Structure formats: structure tokens, C-alpha cells
Image 1 (tube, rainbow, N blue to C red):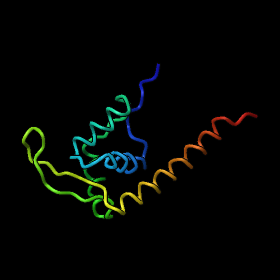
Image 2: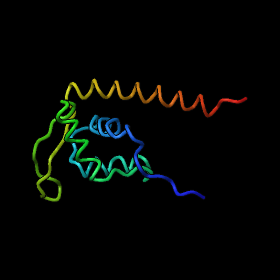
Image 3: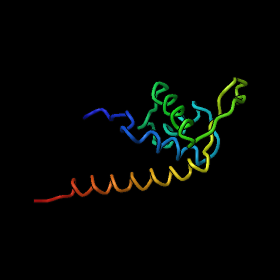
Length: 111
């Protein structure tokens, strides 16, 4: 039996992060835990992928960030969606729906 691939499909990280932040403000580690937990440990987002993506999304105005203190009393950067981020999330969700419909069509095609 093949081992499940836990790599996030290229191009979906922004969608996953924006959807996660739609639940409320979170620090980076909280974002990774949320995605892992909700996907039943199928999806894992590595730090080397997450933090550059968060930086890009912040530059694009989709999220904002502030320093705060985590539950275990550590300094952490907390991220939240902006109005532009909510708009981008809707666009990402539409794009994902189109992509999955197209893939389903190919998989269901019978000759």
C-alpha cells in the first residue's frame, strides 16, 4: 500500500492558510496544527513553506501580523485576515472548486 503524501499540493497553501485564519487570529505554529488536525494528519505544513508564504501574504495585504504572547508565555507573531484577505479567500475557494471539478471530470471520463 502506498504511503499517503502529506505534502501540500502546490498552490493550495495560501487557500489553506487563509481558510484557517478565517477562524480567527493564530500564530504560525497554531496554523500548522490546525491544518494537520482538521485534515486528520494527512496534511502537514512545514515551517520552511509556511513562513515564506505568510510573509508573501502579508506583503500582498491579505493578512496582518502583530507580536503577542502565546499560551505558553512565548513571544509569537499572530496573524489575522484583512478585508483583502477575505476577498482573496473567496477567489481561492472558487479557483479550487473549478480545479477539483475539472480533475473529477477527467477521472470519471469513460471511453
